[in-house]
Image (cartoon, rainbow, N blue to C red; front, side, top):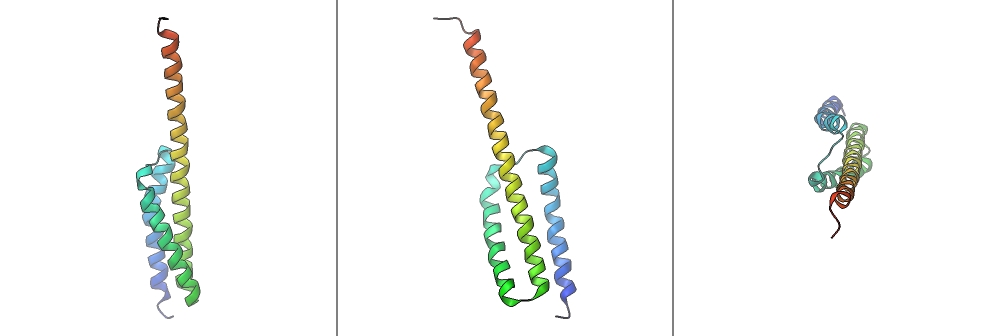
Length: 108
């Protein structure tokens, strides 16, 4: 295909769009669970598009969707990891607060 460079440029822009989100999640060690349905739908769409690109056999499209699939998997894994970590921390804090209340409350 003579205009493959356009697909490679599109791949670069797609990758750049994900960088701020991945960077913010990594720096803040935080993620929002409410965006998971969106990420799952993006992942399903990317899997379907990658499958289609494999059937076409066009290398520029395969490169585009393989990178998109990789980035989607990283984003959903990172988001899931930080949600689980933050949930565990929240449970630990609640447990400590409960224990402190039991120690400070006078017996009835």
